[in-house]
Length: 215
Image (cartoon, rainbow, N blue to C red; front, side, top):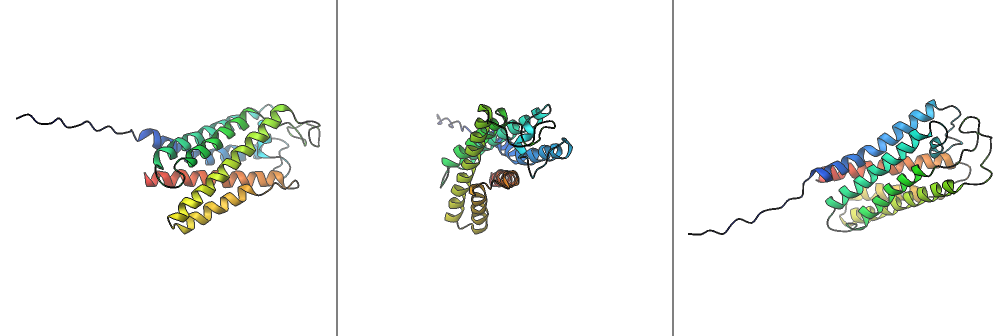
């Protein structure tokens, strides 16, 4: 007697999603390990006067450029992983896009460097640049778009957690969004940028790790 053939079951390999979440989890720690090492070793750098992005200027600027680009690629990989993991509920469409914009913005911020100013790199005249270059403008726009997209992603995740009655994750994600959306203080801009970076990469790292556990 003939029997019906068992239909083939097609499964999506777990490796790409897992790799994306791992890359997203490592992007933040790697970014700050590189930035801190440069802050401590590059002559004339002062975090109270110079934003982290200024490390991308000078002869050794390629290190920070590579750091931005690799962190951005980690963000893009995380976006892909989130898109494969979060397939229902609030944010299933928005979160991968917003995290992807964050990653792409970091890549762009690395490729378009800010201008030397305020005595860094060593030998640069003290004070702000007389006129911002086109790549300095592009850097500022890319960074602003990147962190704004991540703040919106944090808001979306806050709503998602709140609807699932996960109070602590909702509060923490909402707090991250609030920090990222605070207006820049002209007097403490470089410190605020560093804090924003720490909050942003902590958020992406926690997101990546939580997605790994849920998977």
